[in-house]
Image (tube, rainbow, N blue to C red; front, top):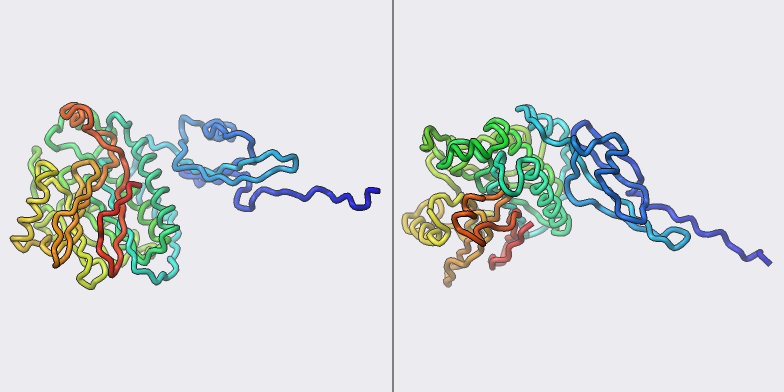
Length: 383
């Protein structure tokens, strides 16, 4: 009477979620076994010899679920972790480059370009959002969201614009306050900022060819006694970082098609995204004006004076640490839009104290799409 009795079907965890842990000495990936309840990830690492005092979770864990033979649903968690950044040495960026394994993106016939605008990282600045360790966590969380967008977007081209103030510096207006609140030396700031931007380039290079640009900015300026000296489009830490990234990208073969920096005596630049005169993208930090409401007037003067910004159809700025997107003009000859990029810094607490409630903003990396044959209409994402 048991001839028709069949054994229970064997249920296995998804192949991509095998329990295990890989660690290269600096970063690692851990995958839990199937669990009925969410784990404490710090304890999971502790049990395997990775103390929470020395190692930290980065990004958002991925999950995979399946049903066990008795009906209980199990969840496996895959997450990334790294050794906490407690001190830095100048070879950090080169160590990152040696671990880079370039993956040539598959050619995509797409009329869409994805624009990523990291702005005001101000690496080395301590504030109400923490220090450089917390900056790393915030920025990598944004990178995770950006990668999900790139996976789903089917883009033919990616533009990365370093919108300035990638480091905090030590000699701006409130230099004594900077010296007290900084968590890293200028050399360490530059090294860590370079490594973080290299992470973004590596991530994006898996999905499409890249244009990478960097503007000149006030926190990255060559300054003596708080006064800017030298050529603004040349003597700037953001531009220096781009030069290092270019050398490394060339060495390991990443698909960067254009590198953009200002002319030596300029602080920003403009370029034709599709090389057809349709979308002219401009980039400038924004410290050229004292307040955001003055930016439209500044741009209008640039048009009148036929500067390098005169032909721009979409302008991106940083500096003001908040999201803003406005149509500046719209005529039969076309539209002009201004995108003010969000910040990723540790908090401008002095500004909040001066402005009162509402003087700060949500941290994110501003991103948007440009499409050939289609006007930009102000759709922006904060990732």
